[in-house]
Image (cartoon, rainbow, N blue to C red; front, side):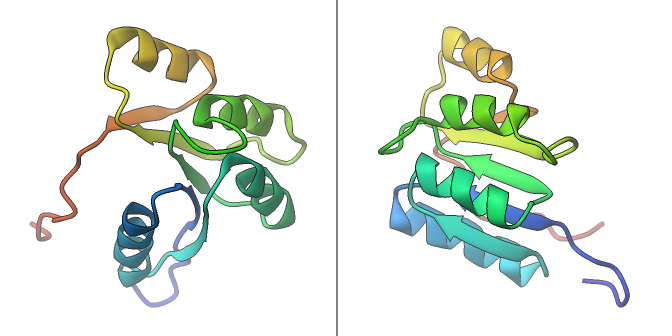
Length: 120
């Protein structure tokens, strides 16, 4: 983190606590303010309470699936400009297309490597 630079606030919605904690740890280590929740309904509440800059959504969560959460986020007042990443094990072409139709800005499949590259 650079002095004087405000890092984006990130909301993570992931029902697997190990994955949720890993993502939160890596982002916090890089200086991001992170809020992590375990399901889609909690994600909507958290987004309303504290507008994040980035939302990372799992697809398959209890209560409300990631694409549905994304659709709701896109209609919520004050959520213009919030980036949404779907992070999911669903890797089929139809799944990716559905994620983008729901309003996701990007789509990343699991498993993923938590190892980051060193700065150049």
